[in-house]
Length: 412
Image 1 (cartoon, rainbow, N blue to C red):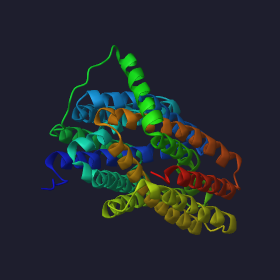
Image 2: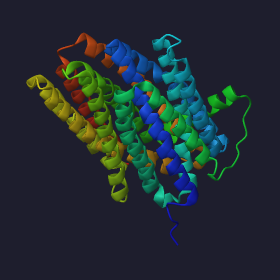
Image 3: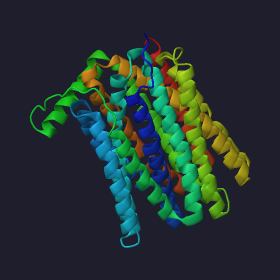
Image 4: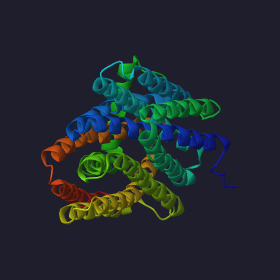
């Protein structure tokens, strides 16, 4: 008899993710936008968001170790409670301390918590569903992530443009608190693993074991990890920096109207992720990692209309519409790609290594994100008036990476 996908525990994980990720999307939208509105500097914006990616790089290996050695439910609960306290603390300190250091530290802590949190969520999926439902379960998790990312920036943008940052902070605090309470009722099968010496020694051993597994047993996963690094560096980072910079600073739109449009554009990104997650679930039986390079090529091709429109048209609204529509399709394709990759990793990795391998892959792939954010922040500020060239450069390099990926995944 086929086990049903939406068991009580998996359903609670999904509902907790909806609430938690909604708060995450709203706060990650509002805080950097608040900084950009006050300073008008893409270089500062890129630098601060780059700094925010450093803690996940350091903490993700610890998150993987914790995911394999501590009850994953407890990890989710503690980190959601901690996030609620962090946002509440920021809201109380805002206005009493210098904004840039306070906001930078807060974003770094938020991203660091998320980097520790995600390995537990991803590693819990094989423990909650049967192997043949792993692709469908990943599709559901990506779909709810995209749904939350859709509603978070849209509602956050409406709250922010109407009443400022404070209401966004209060709503996000409540979201993380509710998510933590809900997760208390999840039961995830758990087999304790012993610590081999101290924490640092254990992290080192786990990291080494994961590297050995990728290098000797599954080198294709290692190569795929570097493909993701390249896409993060040249495509994802460009979208992260270009979207707020172009919409709020370059396209000659009214400031309040531009902030709302940016919220809708972020919502379009999330809607693309939602559509990609749904399509991954519908076509789960037909998707294979061999086709992932074609998906990446589609992502890269969607970049070119943005650069061409910036070059040929002075219309702010037209450029906004092309940017938003193309980013929607980029997210559709990238979500399908990530579902393919995550399912491949989960099914090809032994259970006692799942959390560690996922955390290693997240750590290495995230290393490229801060570099890309900082690089594009400087490029867009220094190349003001030539944004189209920077966008076209991103598309060209991303397409080259997709061609390389085709050779990597062809025989899997």
